[in-house]
Image 1 (tube, rainbow, N blue to C red):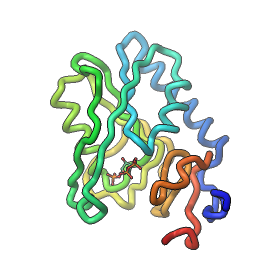
Image 2: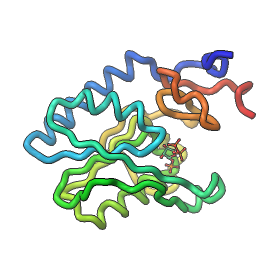
Image 3: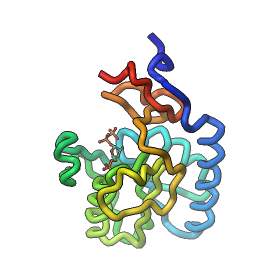
Amino acid sequence: MKVYDSVQRVLVSKEELQKRIAEIGSEISREYEGKQLLMVCILRGSAIFFADLVRAIDIPVRMDFMAISSYGSGARSSGEVRMVKDLNTKIEDLHVIIVEDIIDSGYTIKYLKNLLLQRNPASLKVCTLLDKPERREVDIEGDYVGFKIPNEFVIGYGLDYAEDYRNIPEVCVIAPSAIK
Ligand code: PRP
């Protein structure tokens, strides 16, 4: 079995991803020149986007990693998320960008922003590759958004279904036959 057997169609191609990432990278490089920038990767979904994004930025960037967990899908809708791995970096006086693969209900980003703002960063912004506005339950937006997408289940480029398919190089809509 190959990963593409589980793909219905490609939603965002490799070329579209790299073009948009280059644009966002240039924007961030311009806006943060002369500032101490820390990019925060939210494991695991954003790992692949993060790796490409930091390499599209041509000012000095520090990197750190956080992991978040929800209490299952039922609890997610009540906004219950918790941290399972914290930053190693003290962010006071740093300019911080949280990097996510997707904003869906918005609960994860809301939690992360509240948590990191308590630590008094010099500034805090959110960069997300994908945005599913139809699914939003809290009023929150990304500052840098790669692509707004329809309410379909997407896999690839870091995004999983039951932990599989993160290694597909494009953002794809999952085939109904792959859903268990
Ligand atoms: C996904 C995604 C975001 C979050 C978005 O993470 O990476 O962190 O859900 O959903 P929300 O806007 O509804 O909060 P997930 O819990 O699937 O973990 P993963 O990144 O390890 O795949």
